Length: 203
Image (spheres, rainbow, N blue to C red):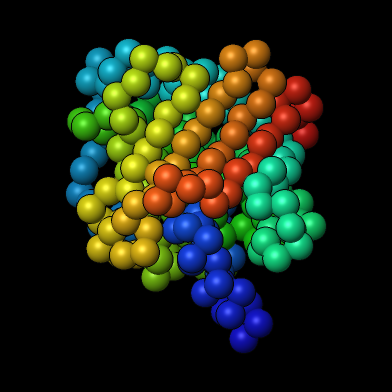
């Protein structure tokens, strides 16, 4: 019961960014409601391909992170160990399980689609079955910056989580290659940021 109440609270933060019950970090994303399939490299804008390529270079490596915002004790992630595992990479898809303490329910899925680079949040239960709130996210905005990808909430996300219709997620690789950042804004206001130290891989 405590776990369920905790999960419901995080819906508004993460998807807002994250809804709970524990998930298998190697589960596939067949639960997505969209029937879109990843496309080949040539169909993705050059800056998005460059970002995808740089992120792929981290494949097989895990990194520790810290919550930068919010910084108070009321944050559900306060005091918990954050870890990203760049675990599965192909020519079209990167899967990054994001662990919060012992909670392994979240995976970031970055895919090359016809519309451009896509970010989705795959949430799974301990048995690997999809959570009720899963596969939300959006398509990256066009940009000349190959280090930063911004993903406004798509129509599926707005229907699944109406309060998150103005969400915008940002994935950021610092120019010096030392930091990966996951950022969430809602109504153009910062709601969450985690920075991961790429200079100290865990494996």
